[in-house]
Image (cartoon, rainbow, N blue to C red; front, side, top):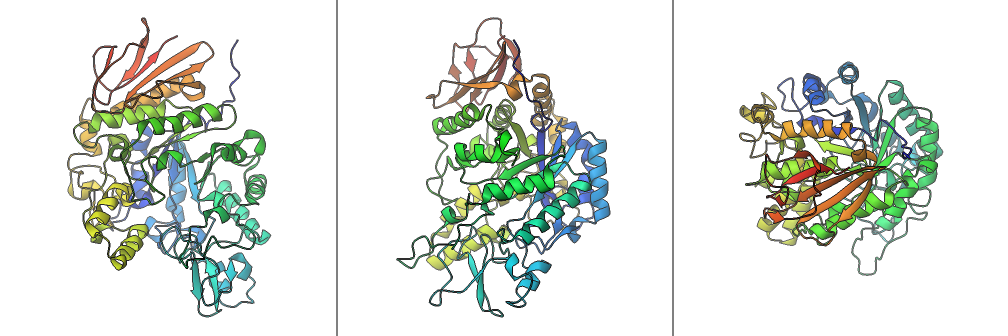
Length: 553
């Protein structure tokens, strides 16, 4: 008897994320643009991916690289025009792919017309579009911390009140309690969907609802506090997202994925359970914290593989039949996956292939970030002057004021900075990695002469060629998309081994997360090897960073 599968195109897709500023510059001004993406459509399609996720391209003053939007219905001047965007959408669809847009509606830019009007007067009709409060004894309204350092409140001289900003001071939070705000958002979403896009990745979606009263965390010692329990997964969040789905998404064959930091698995089911009619899937961050000693991004430790496996296995097994996973190892907010989870030195090629095998053999939608298909590594930026990320620049200023060891601080940035993934896509060994003929907005990573698309395509055993085989394999074997997950050897500190099972089909995945070879005897006779990142070898031995996928039955 065959298991009935609820097949959806977005479940079976491999999503390729593009950070437009760093992808390809068509006009030599040093900034990637829409026409640059258009020029590379054939390349993207050749990878076997199904969906392009475009990071924000809306009009923005770029305080946070486009996540501070001043006009949701206009294209950023640096990136091109709306005509360029229309052509991009057309080209993507002609190539047989789909396009999803980044939706950033927890906050706007302080240059958005709504906020310009809101801060013009306390009596402005747009005042309640944002969150304003009086101070307390000359201090901010509460002790919440912003994500990029300092207080989450900014004083407005003209109207003599504070406004809330969970990110930079130029990203004021929208007041989702106001139904007019929500309707404006839904109207804008419908506008883009009517243009023909295929869905949204929704930024910080679980921060829309704040706890009434905006209570302080603990101001007893006068220090600022995080406050996430009061603005993440708030009391009306599911009401808001259900309404968003009902008023903007329902009835359209599109995909939605929400960015949801600090969600547990049970909380995730409330966001993505099919009967909930909220989101198709979400990005959870539990595995992104496995190499952190604390909440501090820069406070890291070596990967604990057993803990990492436990987290992955939990989300694979416990979400099966209850919701749909989003599988990723990096994006525009995380460092390069090979440097973080693999070996960016001697075994870069092997470990990059192994990590891609891992992503392609999990239940859920696979997300790949630009450059991951050629094994790009961390940027290697050594000087603070070379960094562009507002998070780094704010943190460095505080580190200087606190008298911290700046050498150690910079080491942390070289490991974990968001700029590690934001340096230009490495196309060739030409100047500036073939990204631009001008002066790039951020320096290319140190590896571009050796690691680039041109060099990878010239090699018969390259990562990019292996990636194409993986995308083809995944499409040919539905068990790798929909099958149940069975975790083997959970206590092993070196190997990640699991089965994928669907009806009478069983597949075995073997992943060596280390440079040490290992003997093993769990592969049955007459098993069919579907793919490996090595040629030849013995079925009873896994070499450094080796991966193998077998069809057992």
